[in-house]
View 1 (cartoon, rainbow, N blue to C red):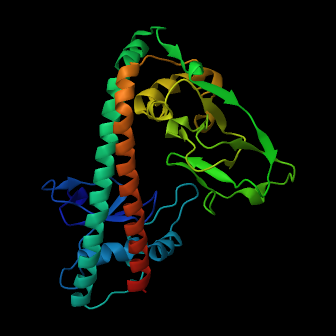
View 2: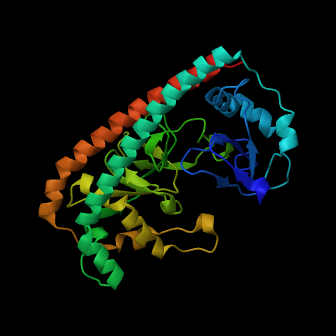
View 3: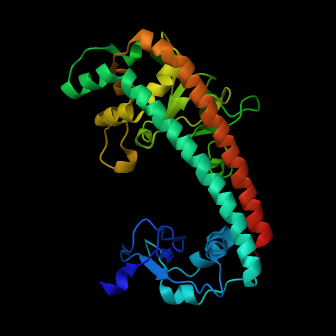
Length: 324
């Protein structure tokens, strides 16, 4: 087991998924025991600064070089001999320390913003737990009390061919967003008459096969076109803020996944009918009091998220400007 022991400050490379991704061990424990899919390295402090090294080897262009050295038919992996043979640009130690300190400050800001966002989301989750206290008890006891979601949601299907008036959008766990190159698969579409689903601003949308990945939300972008695999609903008899917090909560999604159907995991889905038949029981007075709290919390999350995107963009620029 001696060869698997690592210590705080050691650099750890992943052999796969993703191959070459590097981090360092924190001072949380006196020693660590590594699995077989990790490579341990020790830096020479006289030659290399830790933060400089990590940012250098984790940048996209260097990671692409690592990917070119991987081997394997299904799970691509890299070994220590291949890693040792890869070249790495380094400056003199004094310059390394300056660059490393700069990235340490950037990382500290990123971690701070991520912590604030995570804390606010946990706070919201606690509020939803309180709001759904009776509902969760009913789910656990198999009770049929409460109101079906069909009382608050009505499904609609509006289809149209691609046109210039409505832009294409995609849906992820982060919400509805404009379709970028990352999600663009339109070049695979052979049917010129393919129809897309219209989702209007303020309506609920979800992917039946990806509910397990929290792909459900209200469309806050604009009226747009999405893939026909998505399902869309009008919201009735309830404040949209309360409904969105309920259906995006871990408690709701965990319960909804009991209705998944299908044999292949990736294609297992929750049908719109099963979703609409889920019963919830909420106190309207409590829900009304929570609306301004949810609004304020969501605004703070959006504020911190925008700051996080900006500082992440700055980091990407620094990586391209400071490393060859």
